[in-house]
Length: 351
Image (tube, rainbow, N blue to C red; front, side, top):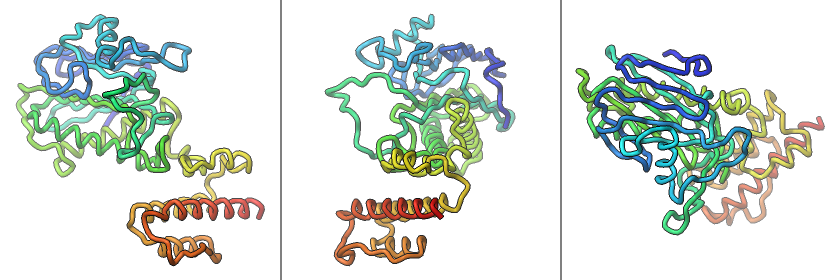
């Protein structure tokens, strides 16, 4: 696996003849031969074999903190963007973000001689979300504006991938994205759950239908799926670090661990926001894991309480605990877990 410095490399020539041009506000992929493209974009989305251009666009104007739609719908907005980039929207598909293009991460590897390239832009500090959370809007009644953040993934493989294979590859890439987010313990911005992505992620897959090697399997058990998953995870982690400095070291502290639990202000007031590399962090992490297991119904409330006693080595009393049942009382247990964590952290700091 190898990486390419986007800051130094503004024009990337792929072995199949296609060209990637990375500018300040856009990445443009220029197709030189017939390609099969699968895109999640509303502009040129679905499976297409007539596309000539693919783009990734930074919506955020230089020096601005927010951006506005250029049209009433996202599809029409992307059409305007493509025209501004000098691309024919009829033969173009594209995604947008508020991540700087020079913070893109590019990873490459070979599979039976074929070049596989993954490019990722990513930002999850503001828009991280967990699948299944309450939605922010209903598209039938409301048109959302541009969102900051987003994970956009582009895969270019000089292989013949059947249409079904491309659809399975999209699943594999999504699973790899969520796996990388899980390994970084990135929490949702809209709940106390572990994020699975952002609310605006997109994927574009490009393959060569005339290539000699034809694949019908892109799942995790297949070698091709393994390679793509590794590229996606590595590219996503690098892109997150380049954009916001998010990495394993930053995620080790208490502030990252307790994100979404409403303790941010409390941590600052008690001088605990930067606490890391102490025994407090793994203890807090284990307590939160117990909470999740109870919330998911994998552990009973009684087992959760027993686990807390073992962790914090003190008697824990919860009024009428023997009458509590799931799931109605998971909120009560959550409040109790957080109270135990706060008590432990204060006493640990004073000691």
